[in-house]
Amino acid sequence: MNIDQKPIPATLCQMVKVGASNHGFSVEDVTGPCRKRDLAVVRWKIAMAARLAGYSLTQIGWALNRDHSSILSGLRKLKKLEAVL
Image: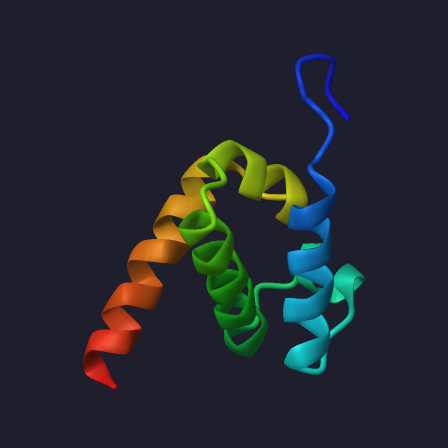
């Protein structure tokens, strides 16, 4: 944890756990460095749920071990993906 990083809210941690397990992944998979598309989509879905729940991009990034700009990019990609489907 960085000096300026605040603790991740328990409910956000729970969202990550539930989102990962619902898609057959572990929390370590979701927060790890893997960039495979199926895992990235799960991250994007978790990020979207957290964003709709009112969490900031920075908070979501801390929970998923990503930068806030990566979260924003993922949310945009998810919207495009959903528009195609």
